[in-house]
Length: 169
Image (cartoon, rainbow, N blue to C red; front, side, top):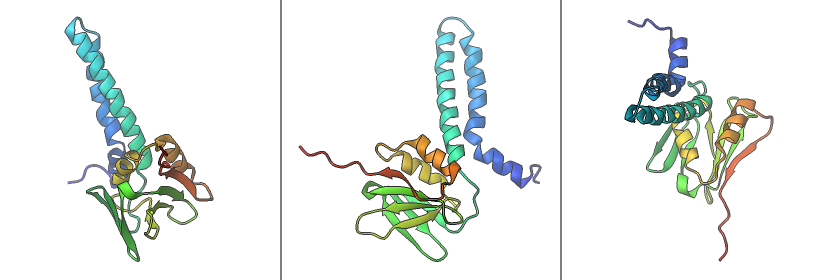
């Protein structure tokens, strides 16, 4: 018994963290208007709700439509893409760069690892949600830049992240 249309369910699922943050924020606001210790607990809950809302907002912007070619898995600090025609794996710790190439349909993430061929992952492949956390763990990545480029879809490849050069001592 499905009472919710698939399109509406997909929208709710995409924005799930933001939707979950709303009752947390409401509870925190209610407690924050109280007295004594409850007021301080309420303020902490409000801050936690805001953090959840911000993280959910970023994740929802990263998630696109699913149903593209292939499947992505992130496991043991390794990104693996199983595509219909190609695929591959890269170690997150060995990545030297991440780019977004919007010239193809669908746009693709281009992951570079020294000594390996570039790995092209469609932004709408199944499991690409896991790439958000993998990319967020890269040192110095600018998440807002990544999300802006993802929504803009520029007509040329855009470098999202490159590995910082090792400092000489």
